[in-house]
Image 1 (cartoon, rainbow, N blue to C red):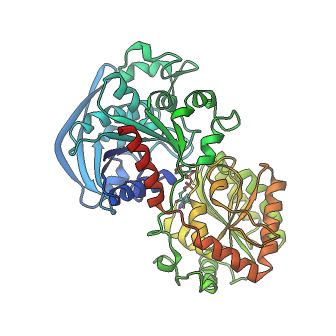
Image 2 (cartoon, rainbow, N blue to C red; image 1 turned 90 degrees about the vertical axis):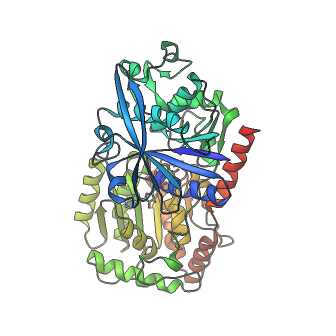
Image 3 (cartoon, rainbow, N blue to C red; image 1 turned 135 degrees about the horizontal axis):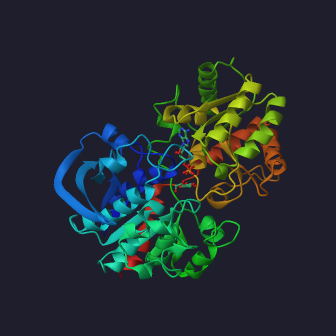
Length: 474
Ligand code: ADP
Ligand code: GLC
């Protein structure tokens, strides 16, 4: 099959979160299964700066944005997995420091930026050879594409994947002319939601198939608690909605061949985790220690349950445990975390920033990963943690519920610790269970081995998408 992926992130060239990891891995996995796959992204500054072998093509595409007429040159390159990549060059929109705006903020012209990108995608598809049969779109930035495909009766099937329902691409009605769509599309049956343009809703209504990144989240988003206002819209379309679990990219995340660790390790040499722990201690200015090390690696947003972390952290350090947080995001959370680290420097370190190398070392060094997410469409960090024998302590929601086997004290089996109510008491109770296991080395090692044996390969996810595409083309 011939598939064109469209999105705004692709690791390592443009990344703010897990979406980038998915775009780096899924197209390559499909290509490995014999399909012809290409990706299209905006030519962001970070891509221009980091993608080797990037070249302009002769293709220049034109699209209106309201009264104005804009053009974009298409560039071509290949990802480090050898997937063909098209980039939309429009420096006025994409040659900027951030992808969407400073963390926690949005650029004021995001409607123009991503409506334009969405208009170019189907225009580009006409020039791609072999001709794409399926456009696989990701998150709200490409949410209008199914509408453009439908309104122009283009010969593509569209799949739209929801990576996070909390980001919907909502713009006031006055921006509607920028879509250049007939007025009948700006109605409650169309892309309007409470008098606003809602790009995610547009995709939900007009895409041929909807997927989200775990089976559990596919169910949750149909309820008011997790639906972010769109649960009714989703319930009406559940016939075309399914959940396909993400995979983990074990070529980048495998402790037995991770060049970013001081000493690789496998389930037979778990003792070597201590060497990473020592290296980490040195790096953050602590004496070597044996007490449990907890970590969190995360975008710092409401979703990730940062308040729960702030609530339990002082208790952790009272017990003599250590905590290292790596993250960036909303300035308010960054400040609160910095205050926390200032209050307990012997036990708590907070590293604000985006640092891939530090993420690898931290996962290897830690005993437990904290993921108290209020909701989590899939979550990739816990998948990486499992492979590193770092047991996740997580809220039982979305993909966390689908990927972590909760510890069963009766059998001693499990790959992590889950709690369900989003309260600091429930979170702390799960942490206490983990501390109990930590005191019992054979039990800890059994869990670590079981965690390291879990398989969440991208090939399995790719096979599920393949089946979905096949059904659409039949
Ligand atoms: P989300 O997409 O909601 O941010 P995921 O768990 O799916 O959550 O993916 C997060 C990805 O981003 C993982 O690859 C994780 O390691 C990485 N990540 C998040 N914050 C940082 C950071 N500050 N530094 C390095 N990597 C980070
Ligand atoms: C989103 C979600 C995360 C998911 C990622 C990749 O950013 O928050 O749970 O793993 O997308 O699908």
